[in-house]
View 1 (tube, rainbow, N blue to C red):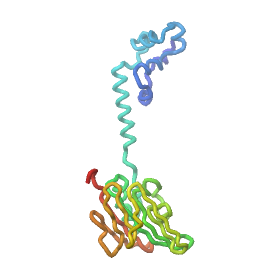
View 2: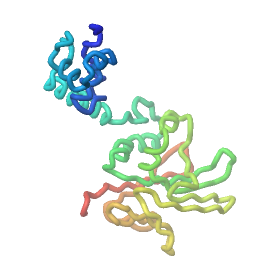
View 3: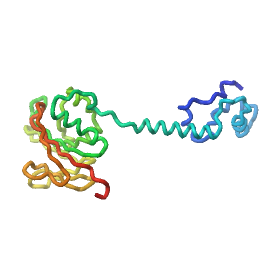
View 4: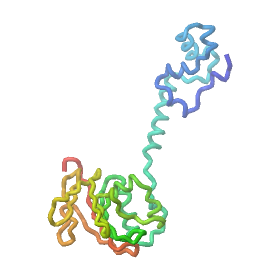
Length: 234
């Protein structure tokens, strides 16, 4: 038997084995089975070190190493996402307002709706309401924060209106339900807490909501509505 067969696998290889027996089986060679004609016996000889397999882990060592590697992988998976606004020089009030809300919307501590009215590259005036949390999770915001691209409403957002073509759309999101039956304008209901946001600037936005107009050089008009996500049962 080749001595190199007895070398213990590197740490990152341990997690691939579901059981210690699987680990031992990986050490069995066709030559072992040819001479021993018994897989169980071959496994026992490897575990006891009769193959000169000093590098083979004992059962306790295997279990401890596997748990440690799984924990390391889980920790790496749960590393917080790098914010798209991190390290950016944000010169406009709107971009700074977005950056200030980015972490909270990504983590679920807050859900924000952004109203934007502006013109497209073709000069058409559009407006709409954007679920900021949803767009953060489904889009790369680095081009927006770096100034390479403008954040504009899309027909797939909570609401969209093209003032020239008169095209209007509305869509629910994971966070918000759009209410279009209100005669005084759109309403948005938080799906988790069932509270209703009123975007009419002439009235209060509602309990636990805030309305913040943003002075910006980049857009015709911007308003941000914020809601703290309630705890379950609230």
